Length: 112
Length: 116
Image 1 (tube, rainbow over the protein chains, first blue to last red):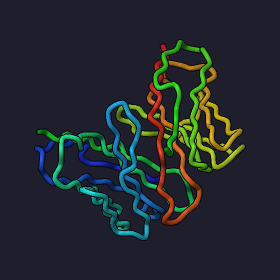
Image 2: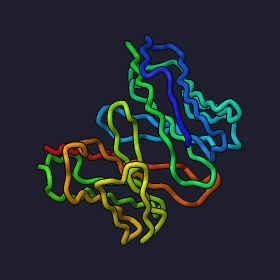
Image 3: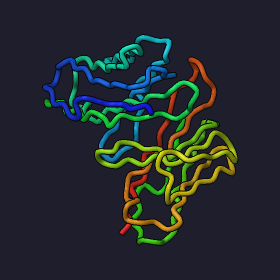
Image 4: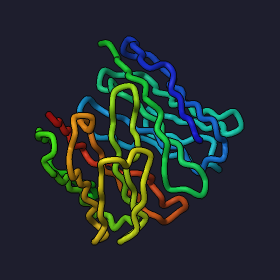
């Protein structure tokens, strides 16, 4: 059974800092990995999707990397802003399945 | 605009009173799924559907029913709600087409259900 862990559970940084969020998974036979953002009481917004054949994906100030052999993905946020404050979730999809397994998220607070 | 629409956004009901949460997507996606989100437990899959008339249980299906009579709609039915079904519910959809054009999951805005 795939287990997905996100550490830390919460993170508080001053505005302007570069930061890294971590996602670890136990089964390396993944098909893809997707990073989401969730604002309080809201739905999930897709940020980046990395296929198993890719090492990283970039969108604006966000960069996600994938290392299947070590079972890790990182989400790098450059020059953080208060508007980046949210909970960040990673979701891992195993090969041969449509279902994804979610981590429990990292709650990020960017302090002005 | 491509989206997944859930209704209602908020619902308070009493134990045992049947309810339905609707989910509709306009992206012609084959795959649809329901999740519940609880503090400390993350998102857990309730039911999913690979296509019309094809549904299957997720990790926590007890107390829930679904149907997929049309491709765009995937309602979640609680026949006899109980307080332990108080949660935040999300519907999601995804294309079954694989490859670089697969953008992964699109989620609805959520339904906050309280059962008293």
